[in-house]
Length: 558
Image 1 (spheres, helix red, strand yellow):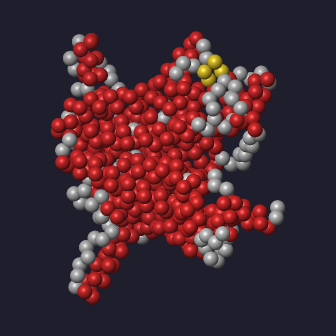
Image 2: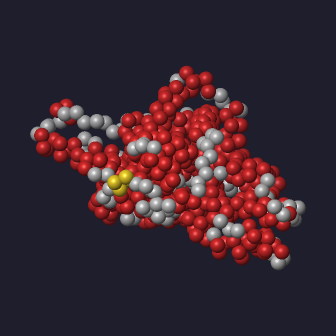
Image 3: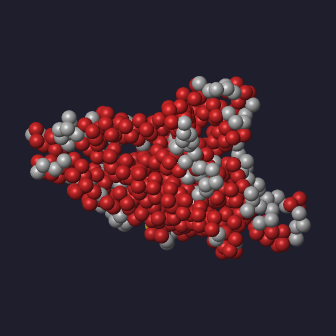
């Protein structure tokens, strides 16, 4: 390889001249990691150490519920996601082409929304139990047995229904990238569908499945709306109990630090799942995959296996909330509702724009400087997605409150003016938390789009005298606008759904659709929460459609 080719591949242009890109990327990484450092620091240096009290009383209960919840959801999303991904990719049966995108729909349904809808549907006064009593002549709940949904088992079932698409999404992408030659070789050696799946497809897809399960478990750890409504006291609920109930921020930070340990374990599991695995594809991976035509009972089992998660995880709750939204429309469509909707859209749009701008900075800095510093900075900038919203909120409010106090003290001393809260307790803190939490999504999408732009374009533009910023604005942005739009859209929708961080960081007398829905549901007013829930779900369908089109287009269906 010539020197010029090496420089083109490495894109290591005038490192000294472009050092400000590297500095900016490191600065962003520092801001992202700041909340984590703040939480850990307060956990080890609390004003009042109640850790022994937590250990002696409720910590074991929080830990048990959290571990069982994550274990149950992990098993659920693995079985559902892998099974459905294999069926729609490798098997032929009626409706398969529709299930390819239908199975992604539950991804638009926040876990707390489905919890509210199913509770109303299955409770004693709900339509299901009322129908049972009418059909069989029962007069009270003592005359029959019906499972209770508002418990740990119910939380596992409902969260599994809306989180399995993480596994389905990545497992399906991995199955689509399989080598047709490897599958044909397995058939020639006499292996049937089951053994081919077990010994060929599953090992190849294992890294993607590990990532999908880890993402689902991170969302499980982040959830507050479902566990609070079902009275399942997890570590996330413990943060709220300790901080808002006991008034001890240090104790909440200590529980938050324990949750960070869970996050590190999940990241470790994901890395372990990908260890020493490298599969290289030949040109045959673009050939049509050899599929299995299902007949008889197997065909109906496949249809049922793909239909159940879609119907239970999306259409049933959608029908329930649509019905309530129509019935309670006059009560729900108020000035307050429109204000909350505007707040949600404004904050989410602002977070999406800021996250996209920062993602461009980080991704382009990494493109210009292919060293370990930018690589580490990009990894740190993507750390926020793994941090639960409640933990992130504590990490944001601690340094922001300290800075507010310092500015206020300085202004009082020298100018006799009180500045009040400039950062904490404002929408700035909320947008900052959104950006930190969902920056990983934007960085990943922008880096993926930039990687498809030929490095020779950078070299040609630079030899013509263009500066790095000019190259980015005039040449790269037009080429990656599709990826940028996708990144901004996903950040927008995720911010719309975010509940734990919003509950803690929102200003006084300020609500979003997510907090409004949570408040109504907490007051057992499910009908009044339906319109807000429906709005969040409908907005959430947009990235689901984009993801479906992207995956389906990655390989022509056989």
